[in-house]
Length: 297
Image (cartoon, rainbow, N blue to C red; front, side):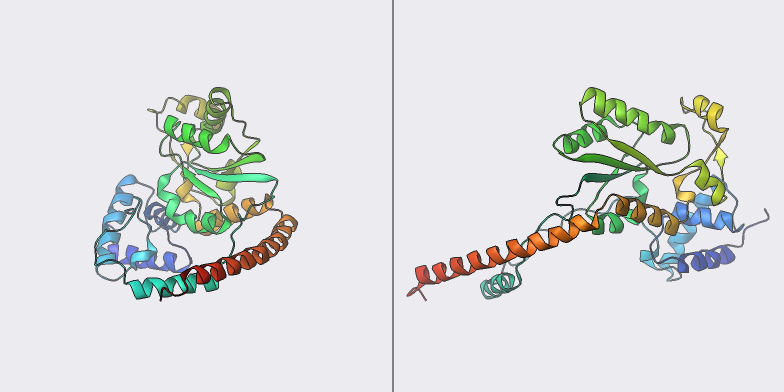
């Protein structure tokens, strides 16, 4: 490829991002540009794209929220200020009581418990809106066969009294295809927790062929590469290469398969029944509080 015209590349990137409602990672955008023959599938071009996008965001050519940062943002907020205003605090309490609702888990009564496991933490920002809305745990691996991840997963799952389903998203390479075996052996054999169904949502060979996803050479440094090449050939494909709308659609559809709408309707009926009891008890408690504080104000 001749010398890159980065004005043309950024314009192409803007057109790609305009096609999607959701934010993208830099690597997802990179693969869309590779598919459009705007960039070559080279690590050098990926790194240059990342640098140029940073500049384009600073110049206002690309919206800040169009790209998901591949590192997590800070958690928590500064503990500063003048403290609560007592009048406002009282008003907030009254408002809370007026609009208070009894809560029930969205998956109450469902036959399955579902988690989404993700090989690449960089895609958390792309997927979290879907999993938060569905009330499904999104768990990034943060490294092949992470013992910490698997130990924490076992602690989460050991008390689950229903069918455990793990939906998995990972690269099509030696590590990515071997994770199911490692996860099952570690969680089931060491921790004694049974995963009833482990479903690989992506990437699969069928998806690679269907969407003509660009391959890379397998990393010879990965000790699982030899077995992978023997079974699949020497071309690996990253999860990021799958278009974001297709990825999100796969996740939504998979979660929906394990979510029984009839049970959810029964949950709504039960919630209405409990809500009535809750409000009646709350009203009695407020009347009792008013009687206790009579004459104090």
